[in-house]
Length: 455
Image (tube, rainbow, N blue to C red; front, side, top):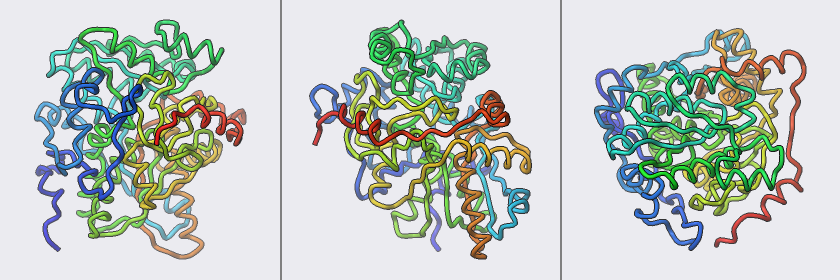
């Protein structure tokens, strides 16, 4: 077999020297972002009013397969990358399965998750552009923590709107962001016009990522010298997260193993897009075949029950429209504990791949997720984040099917972060107070009815 292209873009320690742009190998590209007013494709100039200039270029780039990672970013990456690829020997033994289970662990940094991979990139480009600071949203708090760390490193102001229910459940996350100098506001709030509108329409709401995005974008636009940065969904974020998959593939190649199935949790889609990137690239180029599985919460099932259509990226309807699998920007998820998966839509890249039948999607109940999380923690020694535990649930189920059939499959899943700030959720599960919620067809239909009419 000829030299695998991605190996050219790894250094001697298997740290990526370039991000892999999966869209370059996609025959059918994700649909362009649309101006929310004109419904015409967003121009570079329009996007540059919200995002950093070089990030806009990355967002629009569908042709270059590899984009060099600046030395300043790679220097930061060296503090915690390459991240470990681990074989779950103890879990395999506990399950009694012939399957081989590997996981790519992204929790070995203070933010506790994969989010730092994109946070440092976005903060770097903001600093390079000479900006004063950035605004953002966060669900479970991993992204807000990661961006706080990156902004502190580069000397930028950081303003974070945190989904209110998560802010209440995870006060220590707010405090950690404060350690790194961030200003954290529970969302929806009375500090923005978007927040006040949402509170008027949904009194007492615990919020959603869509709400927090609206407030963060409004704050960025109204404050000179600021730009908005996003922790998931966008093409640029999926690009930065490709370091996960590039490292995972390099390690598996060294082990001489090939995954049969690759599993990741799916909220906005950044970690899954990053994990599968080089593997999906091989599939698209006809060089290898893999099975890909996206796992989402039953309480917010954007892929399994959503529509593939243009929709607002935020509840306040100020962001560009994206073509994605969506439950509608007005959908308000139940106050489940997988805060990072409380988003109404899905990455345009993953949405296009799913629509073409190149990957699968399943939804799982919260109590089943925490059963898997506790089992994993007890045998593998790491307490996983609730978001990551969706992938663990699917990986365990896949391994148990192998036990029934005798198949010796190789399973790879993404362990996107740690759950040490999620003890309220773990306590509720242990005490039998956790329940499952599945939105009704009527609730989803009501949200669909508010979606824009864009062909």
